[in-house]
Length: 304
Image 1 (cartoon, rainbow, N blue to C red):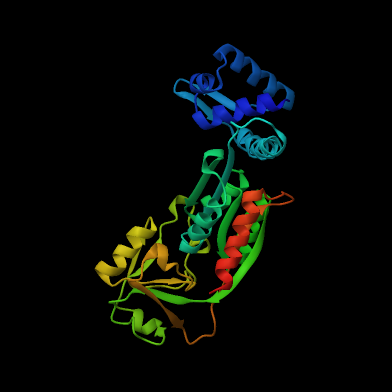
Image 2: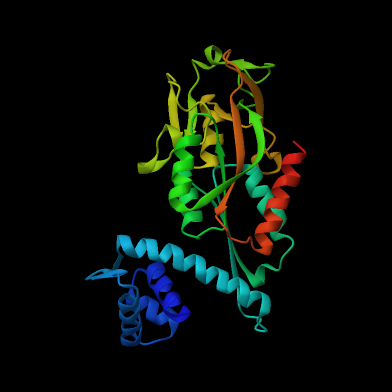
């Protein structure tokens, strides 16, 4: 097994096509096919199934590619650090639940680097996809929260992907509404007061469950609920329908705007705590960008 073969396999997985991969890699398709067959023989598994529509990744292939992607990205880090070539772009990705502060920290991180020399990516996405992105090394860091309710399930999934969670901040639950909401001026808001308003939450797709929800207290029954796919839509629903969501209370007005407020939530049953942190691959060294991103997160959160 060689780094070249790993690079070939990762490119095929990305393009889902031998011919497209061949064009991107500037190698002939017979050469590419021969190299992948030799790789599969050397490791004793089938990575790709060839179909009339392209290629499909096998279950064994998915596992192999996750490890291969991690190895190749470490190689790219070394190459970036010690190579004299100026045309190598280092990939730096962060996946996150829908937190404006995570985007703000990313913005501040990128400002420290020459964007022409890096391929940056910030992905606000579903909870399972955050975990999957980091587990498959698509992203270096994932931003996510755990609570007493979901921590056992999430730890099990983290272990399956070889991930470790590092806490950054603990916070109580807040009700997030637009400033024109009838309850926006309250010192605190109770569940009874929220009953006649729609509870907004982020759609989690086919792999979603109450344990993977981005909102604390997802296990409770809410009489009126609406799912949203992105942060902008959720903010619009807050204004248009007087909707609300339960959150950490850590809001970046610079990105979300000043038309929304976070009011302390009072359940009458004690404190509901969100432990917001980041996940990374076990035993992986963070890149220079990754280290700075964590520093920017800590800097921002320490001011809240």
